[in-house]
Length: 487
Image 1: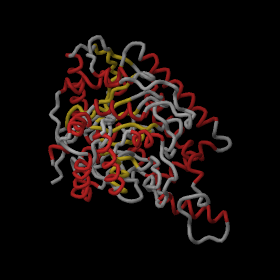
Image 2: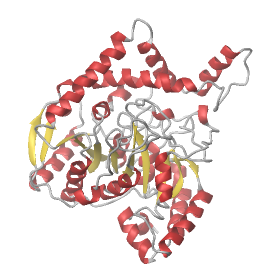
Image 3: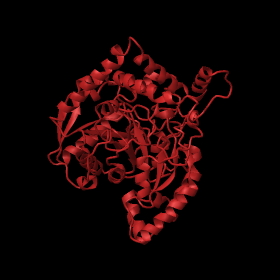
Image 4: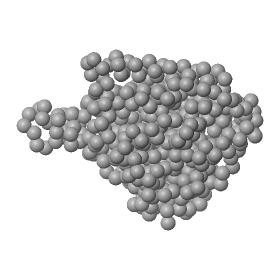
C-alpha cells in the first residue's frame, strides 16, 4: 500500500494503463489512507467517497477501451473554494456551510472530462484569507511533518493532503502566495500560473485581480501534467487569456545550459532563517553546475509590496464579499426585527475575525476621501512593481528566491499578531501583483526536519521556461523522495 501511495501521476499512469492496478483499487487505497490519518492532519472538509468510487469505475471503463487521458483514474483533492456541482463548497466559512453550487467550476469540468477522481474538498483559511489555515471556521489543518505546526495557507489542506499521501495531487488557489507558501512548508511542488492562464469561473472570489487556481503535486512533471489539463481560454471568464495551452512536459526535457537565473538582493535580507538561505544556496549551486548562469538583479519596490497588496486585496475583498447578506444564499441570522438588522447580524455571525478585519480595511480604503490616498496610490505602486519585474527579466530568464522567511511555525504562534502573519508572505506577494508565474520547488530541510522551498519566477506567460528551470533544479538537487509516515 505505502509504495503505491508514494507514486507520482506519471508513475501511476503506467500502472493504470498496464492493468497492474485498477482505478477502483487505487481510489480505495487513498480512501483507506484518508480514514487512517486525516483525524491527525485534518486536511479534508468533505470526503466524497461515493462520487470517487463512481468516477473510478468510469475511469476503469475508459482505460479498458483505450481512451484514457493523463489524469484518468488519478485521485485528486480540491480546495474548498472551487465550485463543485451538488457537493458542498464552504470556503471553510460558516457563511457558506450549507452551500451546494448548482454548477461546476471550469477546472472541474476539465478534470471530469479526463475522468479524474475527486476524493473530496480540502480545508483552507476562510475565504482564502490567511497564511496558516488557522482561520478556517471548522478546524485548523496540521503540518504532516510536525503536527504541532501550521501547514501554511490559505491552501493548507491542499498542501497537507499531498504531503500526507491522502491524494496524488490537489488544486489550490493563490492570491498572495496561498499555493506556494504551503507547498514550501509541506515539502511539495506548488505553482501559481500567469494570471489568466487558468479560468477563474467557479472560483469563489477573494481579490479578483490577484486570484489564480494552480496545482500542488509531488513533482514538477506532475505539476506540468495538471496545469496542461486545467489551463486554456474560457469565454465565461473575462480575464481568461486567449492563448494555446503551453507544452510544459516537453519543455521539462530541455537542459539548463544558457539559462540566466536572477538573484534579487531584496529577497535575501535580515530576518530570513539561516537554514532557509543555506538550502536555497545549495539549489542555486546545483543549477549553476548544470549550466545556468547566476545574475545579480534588483527589484527595488519589493519593500512596498505588502502594503500595496493589503490595500488592493482588501478593497477587492470588501466588494466581492458584499454579496453575502443573508438574502440570496448562504447563512442567515435567525433573530432580527428588520432588513438592516438581518444584514448586520448575518455578516456579524457568518464571517470570522480575519475576514471581518479585511472587509473593514478594504471598505476604509475605498471610502470617500480615502480612495485616492490609498487604493489609487496602491495601484500606482503595483505598476512600479510590474516594471521592476520587466526590467529584471531583461537581464535574466528566471528569478530565484526564498518562498517564505522561515519554515513552518507553531500553531497559535502568530494568530494574535496579524502583521507578523502578513509578513510571512513578503516573498510571494509581488508575483501576484505582477501577474507572473511562480513556483515553489522543495530544496531541502531545516535542522528540525521541516521542508524548505525555493521559489522560481518567470515572465508573463513564460511557464515553459519556468518548468524547464524547475524540472532541472529538482533533478540537480537529487533529493530522496520521502514523506511523513504519520503512523
